[in-house]
Image (tube, rainbow, N blue to C red):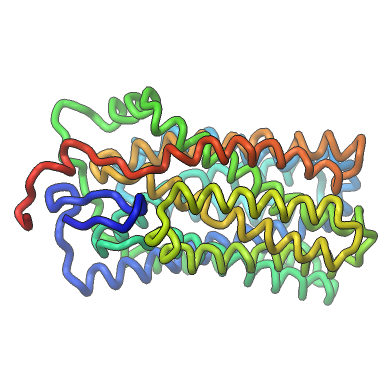
Length: 416
């Protein structure tokens, strides 16, 4: 049996976390890192060009919010189905198939900016649908690798995602500065996703079917929707996803419009937000092991609030840049720590991650249009202040991430 310090880690046992060879685990950890990195790279590459897409489509912030909403709709259709799909096909095939759907979405956006808003909206929907399945499957595989490794590492996988976003945003800034067309840029990213993910996912651990009797995968998924702890974790993920998503979708535009900054400076501020999130996710596991999930998440929410206040009310671009770093740092651990908490019982991980992530992705359903509509009236920069209330809810919900010690986990295993 392995445990973390404080409230940081679940209790695992051999029946639910079967032994893998050291080589299998190392290969799986590397594969999960690559899949997370490419997911972040693809997302930030698209997000870094949102201002140019807005200009090409000639739409208002409110209309742009509705267009971005298509991604959330796609994800929210996919995610509730993901536990059944993963149970049927396993994480490797699920990630491979839906990464290709994601790539088709990117290609559709790339072509759509030349023809109109309808094709772009379809591409964003496909991107969200593919990402919804891809996201849950890679997190379930990440939880399996974490449990096989017997130490906290989930947030470092999400740091891999953030490393990908920094790379994507940095290349995106260069593409903007060099006036590279959106179409050419996004088509190149499509090729990266379509080639790298099918190869990388071959290193995943074999799909482990949960040791449960009398319940189908669909039954487990339905039961997970009735569990208060799982629902509260979903609420926490929702709040942190709203905060992270607001930065991803709107920080660039808020800085350009609110501070009258050059487009390249807006993208650099966005890159600072992503870089801070990456640092938080990379160094987070050690902090969580020392101080526990709950305390770390509460301090994180306070840091994000301070950063948002600097961005919205700082008046000077350098202060806004500092604020974007605090915002990213405070947001870093919310999503991965929530996913790790939902995975405390490996036998129910797929169902619970599916539920928690589905609730969390409601943030992407509400966030883009809400900030966009508020931005139409008070400006996008002031519209970001809506996120402050969401972070207050995250402070209250963070207690749900305290480790789950199930009866199964307490049962003696062969190593005890």
